[in-house]
Amino acid sequence: MEVKDLEVKINDLAGLIVTHQKKADEEVKLHGTMLAETKTQFEKLQKQYDEIDLKLADQKRSAPEQGKSIVETLKEQDDLGRLVGTNKKGRASFTLSAAQTSEVMEQKTIISGGSGFGLASGGVMPIERLPVIVPEARRKLRIRQLLNARPTQSPLIYYVKVSTPMGLASMQVEGSAKAETTVQFTTASAAVQTLAVFIKASRQVLDDFTELDGFIRSSLPYYVGKAEDLQLLSGSGTGQDLNGMVTQASAFNVGLLSASAGYQRIDQLSAAIEQVDIIDEVSPTFIILNPRDWWAIVRTKDGFGKYLVGDPTSDSLPTLWNRTLVSTTAMPAGTFLVGNGDPAAVEIRDRMEMQIDISNEDVDNFERNLVTIRAEKRLTLIVSRPQAFITGTFATSPAGL
Image (cartoon, rainbow, N blue to C red; front, side, top):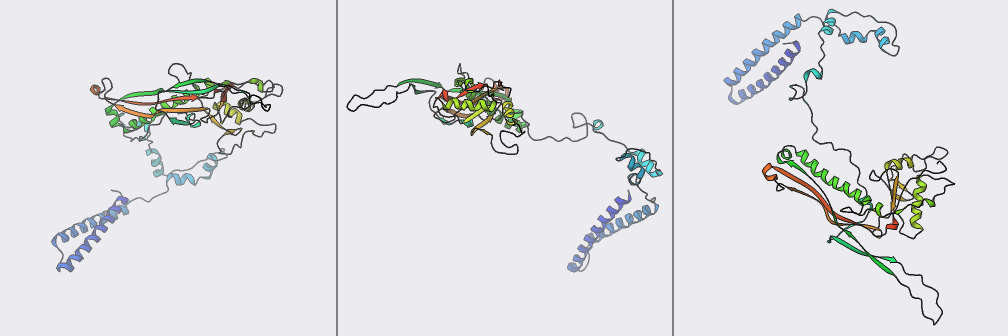
């Protein structure tokens, strides 16, 4: 046992002796004498204390004189400091004592590769496992947030809209017959569709790996929501697809741009808003484009190198022409959509909100001890004013801007 260990041991025994001494004093006050059991323990501790004290004294007398460590010696070498410092030139030499040489020769490096990790590899090094599952990269779902939504109890929604508007009133001659006007209507419909996805898992793995259960329950709704984002934006309107905003939108009129003056992406978006305004439709409230196009707009500078769109240090929400800007990969690069999210132009009708169902009664799940987890929702999209939506592609400016 080394000197340091003996010192710790003797200190511990001294503490125990003090404790038993107090106990003995209390017994003397109470009984007039020390109990035999306490006396025996006291004598035993004192004997151990004396033996360790003698051993400690012998080791201190025989211990060699401690010299400097190798680290201390190296720190004192000015030549070595200049060599490994900023100069990295010259030479250095120094002398090591026998003890320091032994310190160098006996030093061994233990690396993780030789020890192994975990029980599976037979290694001894412990491993740490984070209690969560890191999900894959997920796009922010923003399209639904732009639109108004309300519930419906029907699987099919009919609505009536004007196909031929009324004519203008005219100035009338007193006493004459007044001018008559007419109006024509048409009906349209939108069917409620179902978005759903499911996955199977064994009951054992869900019981044993609780984080997997939570991961599945949160992931399935996300992928239903991601499909919803795509359907609301660009559903084809055929088969079971919703009739999306891009599909029903009017094409961008390139003639609103000035070929002689040249134009940039931001000019095309303003022209698309203008296209809605000049036909007296409800003015757009949002702009949807791909992140590549948005960052191209953000990096646009004037002739003095100043950014045209906003302050790079600002944390405010992005807007263009006072319209909400949504940057999403749901919109293909090089294309855009401007539109109005008011119920007068477009509306989501929800037949069933997001619902998660778990069952062991699917096919042979009970026999195989499996569970089926399903996420689904039912909805439709009514674009009542398609001309309030403009879609197009970013064209190259003839002026080279």
